[in-house]
Length: 127
Image (cartoon, rainbow, N blue to C red; front, side):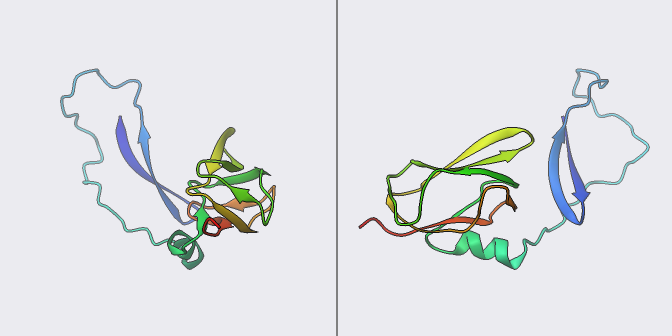
């Protein structure tokens, strides 16, 4: 496995790549490209960073598309209750409530594309 950084449309992604034709040994290989990989800081857009830091806002765990929303504004939810479903790479990811509370607002709608950290649902404290 090799760790690589890929940039797509100006966004950097760290990925693990399995090299199939590589020998099973862990001996270092000589390659034509010998420059060491260096870490490049990635700055999140202000809206994404703000969503991660806003109390009561449930952030998206990954970039994807909103498939369905399982709750309504004003509804009381329990901790670990499913809030919505995201799709990424043809796989569904379920987003659960981090704590019990009241759904104060839904910040997305089905079909919306979201980035990691984007605010999905505003969840107030338990009443």
